[in-house]
Image (cartoon, one colour):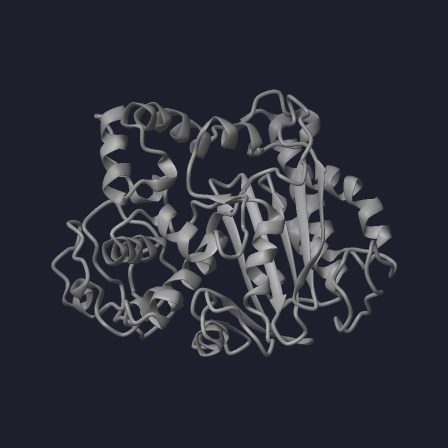
Amino acid sequence: MSNGTIAGRRAVLTGAAALIAGGQAAAGTDGGPPRCSSGNAAWIPSDDLVRDLPRLMRIAGVPGVAIAVVDRGTLAWSRGFGVKNILTRDPVQGDTLFEAASMTKPVFAYVVMRLVDEKRLDLDKPLVAYRRPANLGSDPNLERITARHVLEHSTGLPNWASAPLVTNSAPGSVYSYSGEAFIWLQLVVETIMGMGLGSVMQAKLFGPAEMTRSTFGWDEAIASSAVFGHSEPPEGEQKLPAQPTRELGDRLLRVASKRRKPIASWTWEDSVAAMRETDPKTPPSTHDLLVNSAGGLLMTASDYAKFMTLMMDRPNRAGWEISDAARRAMLAPRLDVRGRDIMRGLGWEIEQSSAGPLFQHSGSNYGIFKTLGVGDARSGRAIVVFTNAANGNALAARIVREATGIDRLKSLI
């Protein structure tokens, strides 16, 4: 690494720290009521924050951002800023797709809870009773892992594994974040439903919720709409880093065309077979699955905000939504992460903030796509920030802080 590159990285890290530590912008709104420091008013970014955002993006080295806000339980505001690709300068627009990364997990968890409501899946029945993956090791704890353990991250499984699966702790005993566990639950859902993950999600959530810009697939139109990830400050970037999702998607698209079966409808078996066909020398990795319940969603910020409206307190729910009991179970603190101030629910992280309980999740794909979503079910408010750069987490934390007026404990971790 050159001295110039090191200096550039240090500048970005310093700028990111400044973003987190910075004070609030002056109060004001862009299409909604004013907010206040207590976090009790609308979370729509103020005019001052919107005007200042290009400067903050430049400091953080984040070329593209999409923000969407829920107020009183409905999508109230959304905007795109900057560019999808620093080299081509294509602008971020309302239909621009971002990698949701680990924010995929609560979306998948919601559909799991629909299957629970329909009594197709029992949260406390061992997953091996539904499907036993070939990569399970000889570990008696594996026989005890349930869907509830997966959704609250207490399976004891590693985040990702290349060897046979074994646990590091007894299921249900401690917090142990695991994407690998979500893939196992994906296999269970596909087995129960007799179709691929993308088809299940479309039938159970994307279609009914009118999330028209959400997909686990890849094709030419998606490739054209999706952002590129960035690792260096825009001022010095002459070459983009590797784009794993895009590169894998383009590779698998040749198989999809030959099979005449869209990637969005692929099962786990379809995905693994295609990966082996296009790269026979490299064993398929669950972490790299394109159709991936742990982090594979491509979507707009406004579609994610539509999803977050489903988590809000309200008297009536559509017939296709999960029951209110299931929704409350998703938001109930179950497992300590950092004391009782930050805990895990089913799919969501729950923070006991100064403004009351928040449900939230962040995401990071390949270190170049950073995302954040924060909601308050009682007030019917939420904010989603999607970014396409390595330092997007610092920028997202700053945006959320200024828009909500809440100092989240999570931003300290």
